[in-house]
Length: 225
Image 1: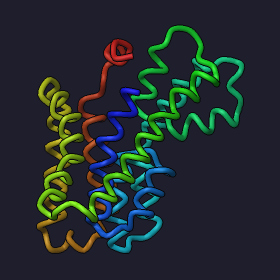
Image 2 (image 1 turned 45 degrees about the vertical axis):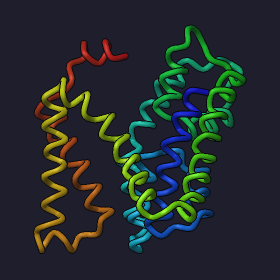
Image 3 (image 1 turned 90 degrees about the vertical axis):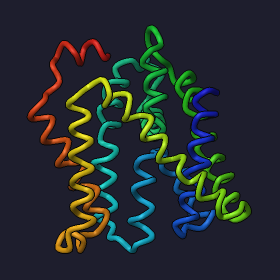
Image 4 (image 1 turned 60 degrees about the vertical axis):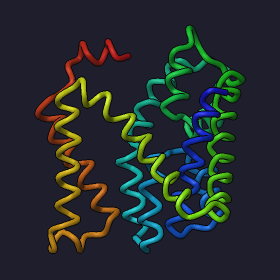
């Protein structure tokens, strides 16, 4: 339930953001029901409304959501014998950061009933929150919609800033991505590149450079786990 309520508020902000960019209430809700990824959906909306290509959309989602593949491999080691292939596909669909953290933190193996109970309420919270936000986008005054639309950006800032304050490589990686993004926005030659590919280039370039310059030590990775 705590994950559900947390998703409800973030999805509400996404719903307002999506309809504000031009999506219908139905399109925004369907996006959340079939894609449970806040960062991926936030990046996808501008690509969709600007008429971007399917290749831009697919590659941007691959880069942004690649961590879920690693999380799924890790989580699969805890699955009990009751978890079959079909169950794995369903769980992978809602294997978010919070779901992964709760399931990984549970002692011993996790079974199919536990996993279905764990993913159901977050999925409902994400879908219902989007519906409420998208509907509110057609009812609330424009000034309130603009204010609430900032909330989803605030969520990502809240995720990045604490880590960046305590870890210099992370801060430099974020700064590099910001500088690259500004370059694509202000330099005339680079402005012609579609927004979907800009997201891909900035994320991949900044991550690759600092993964090479400041690799995470194996002992630190084990401590984080």
